[in-house]
Image (cartoon, rainbow, N blue to C red):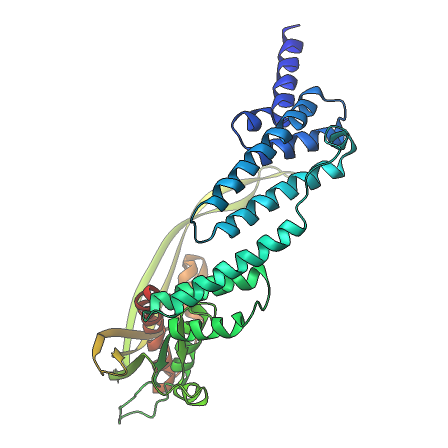
Length: 383
């Protein structure tokens, strides 16, 4: 009996929650009506849900009308946008009621904004457009960003409103920091190296992190020329120096191996039977591990300069290094004495070390990660 009582209580509480009564009590009319109407769609005779729809709709309409009256009588620069939001809420509630017969019977004529919605949309777009013009008339880059936001809001309300697309383009151009990323200087005479791969990785990564939707744009010098960007805001210059490849190193190490292992052996206990016993066995062997190494290291200097004043904003050195290593070996003895790592080593072969260009590529990998992170950290403040 106690179990049935608990079950009834749970069902009652679930019914109270899904009817929307709690949401209505705290003034959340949208949630209250959504829950109540959804409940009526599956249970048309639910008393609590019917009460929420009947009482809640009238209260919501009074509240929203008061809000519209207060907003329109005030001096808020975007009062029509706020009014439009309220009208859309009212229409949302009305559409909820219209789709469920049980709810429609309680509210036969739900209010719908049609002509008023069109007028509010027009006025909301205009107030955003005017705010954009005011911001665009001011000189700062932040004002241009604000202008772009206002114009884009107007365009969302009414696509291609007036000349908003042209204004958005103007605002975006003024708000955007244009950065030329120059090719990487490589004044190293002792090796024939190319840094083109590194430059392509960096420019692609920066464009990925700063897409066209933001307010920082990176260009190659060729792209800047094609777009007729004669006066960029900043220039990033990079230069590798002190890169060198060390002399090949060769090491040999011999080691005697001795290992006690447990193995299962078959033992005959009588003419017709055997059993399996575990016995310890000592394994021995001798391994020679040969290690070939070539080290490479160097520095990348990165500078950020203002184009117009040639003022140095940032100058940092990013070190990098790469150690190429190959290990192989010779072994005699019982292979059971070898570890997994030793097995891999003796299965390796001697190979010639990579050339300077391949070592240079590997040396730049950690530099690439640190460089793009540092540039992103610096330019994020402009986005």
